[in-house]
Image 1 (cartoon, rainbow, N blue to C red):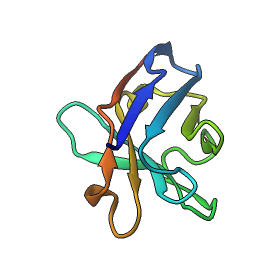
Image 2: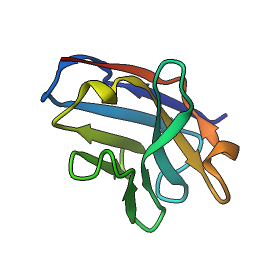
Image 3: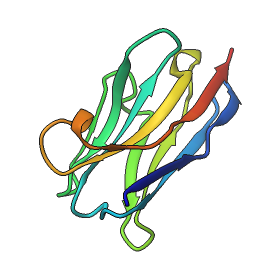
Image 4: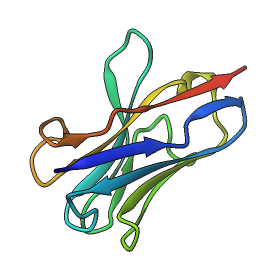
Length: 118
């Protein structure tokens, strides 16, 4: 059984930092592409950051320079370090893992809420 479990969300003031974690079971973060997506209330789910199996990271323009995606192969965990947070970063953050094709066809966690107050 594949399980992705996000944690680390919460309430933070603008300018602050949070680190999200995605503990993965049933697939390897070294073999799968991994990503963080976010969904603001009433809006569609959008990409925040991805980490390809070869270690290449990619970011949405809105988070470049502020967010960093990484993985710990031994812990089979993916992280999203978020700094200089803005109110527009508020939303539910989802972890995803997929072997090929689109992330939407892969495995997803239940999400963790991030709220940035102004």
